[in-house]
Image 1 (cartoon, rainbow, N blue to C red):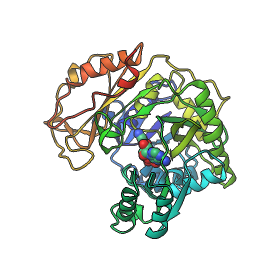
Image 2 (cartoon, rainbow, N blue to C red; image 1 turned 120 degrees about the vertical axis):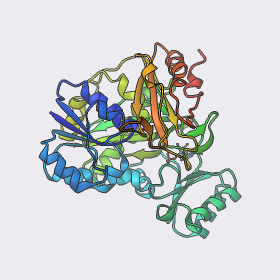
Image 3 (cartoon, rainbow, N blue to C red; image 1 turned 90 degrees about the horizontal axis):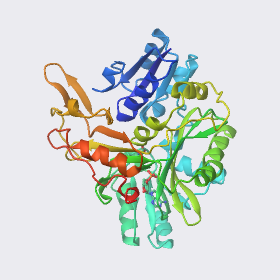
Image 4 (cartoon, rainbow, N blue to C red; image 1 turned 60 degrees about the vertical axis):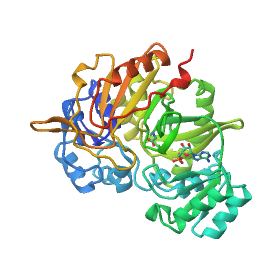
Length: 423
Ligand code: AMP
Ligand code: GLY
């Protein structure tokens, strides 16, 4: 069958790569894709949120499965429009996708479904928001309600900091409309785990867990980014922990959505914090994580197309059937100098031909320019990924290779998965 992957990041590159491994796949299209996906399938110049043209293309090409990569495609309603045409889509509709695009929607859903999460309030006025923060001694997290490219979350340690965060969103409109409503919630402590699951609206099938590294610089310094690297599996995401999170977080969320009349078919991502009182849900995403997908999908031995197709048709097979490569996987992102703030693009990328076969290269902000070859075109440029007999071995393989990729201003974090590599 023909498959259409929507999006242009390294997440979409690994999805297209995984789809190409399936016996069910004849051909993969990526819309709009990047300089790497063009070598795997065919890039189609349609933006990820261009609903009408995506539907037209999928109908014309008789696409058998559409996989939604980025949140922008979910929020634009690409899933709804394709399903209306009877085309199987792996990815929720716009309303169900509000579990990611509106923090207050997500918190309200968690409250009704009794999902363990941080206590919170929702505010549009500064005075009650600040009062709530004061009651909690300023140890709060102030979140813009809407999508802010992963930047609309301010973790505060004092009343003063919290008041500044509230002002930044509600008075100075630093996050535009996304911050016109804020969620203020208790600040929790503990390691974080990304737990992604495939669901057909009823059954919930967890993937292996991952941990991502959100800050730009080593030692968790610098601003938040989309993610500078990841590894799978983190040792503290034990089978018991995953089972508990499925039972207390993911299944209740899908059940509550269904009760609300929202049929969620696709990937549901829970951002968890492992607290002394058990796992707590920090957030949901309505799609694969990036860079989590780049370190989880290479470990999946089962047929990803069959899995996504079953979910898209509302007909997921018996839970517990997924097969995994036991070897851990580590991924390191190479980014443009200045990312996540302003950065320049258009720099030639050299050295990719010297990457050894054991290292997977997933492209994000890259494109081919006739006559010049591969150049940078975004903030996160590439993810380099390796499997190994241990996290330490996988990490060593990636880190010893990453320096071979060169472009003006390139940087990466050298401490990805270091915490798990001492043994
Ligand atoms: P979110 O986009 O909601 O996942 O938030 C981004 C990051 O902010 C998370 O990965 C955490 O590191 C941090 N964060 C979010 N909510 C909380 C919370 N309630 N307590 C502590 N840290 C949080
Ligand atoms: N890596 C976190 C995300 O994809 O939202």
